[in-house]
Amino acid sequence: MTLRVLTLCGSLRARSSNRAMLLAYERAAPDMAFTHYAGIGELPHFNPDLDGEGKPVPSEVAGLRDAVAGADALVISTPEYVHALPGAFKNALDWLVSDPAFIGKPVVILHRAHGSSWALESLREVLRTMSAEVIEDATALLPLETNQIDETAILARDDLRLLLLGSAAALRATLDRKTNQAPV
Image (cartoon, rainbow, N blue to C red):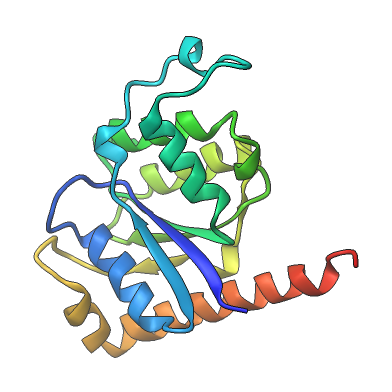
């Protein structure tokens, strides 16, 4: 069975190192089927009044939730902005809080290790609060220094490629265990 992976990039920047990490992850795991969600900047501001019981959510939100529901796991990479998660990315997570498909969803975090971990710790806390299953042994901290890097340059570095391969293997192992433990 091919694993279906949805990536969420917390950066809206076209040449983001976070986006490059997600694309490199895809290339490091060719046996998985990837969908890169690109609509974070298009989501309306979160408003609980638009997410009431029995009410249809905005179409952009429905698209995000459908993508999450259709994935076996999520791989997330986000920058840090002013010691926090970027606003548009946090907004996307807010829209997923009441989504039953998100509860227990396996999540891998890729993070650009550059000396600060405020956003990483914030992301972990938000995901725990949302009842996601953060796969810690698949979380990878990549020592990247610049946004001027693409997935080819990431994969050309042995240390980074090995981190991504190890992360993908840990994700596969976790999902295989879950499948084998599922009631028949």
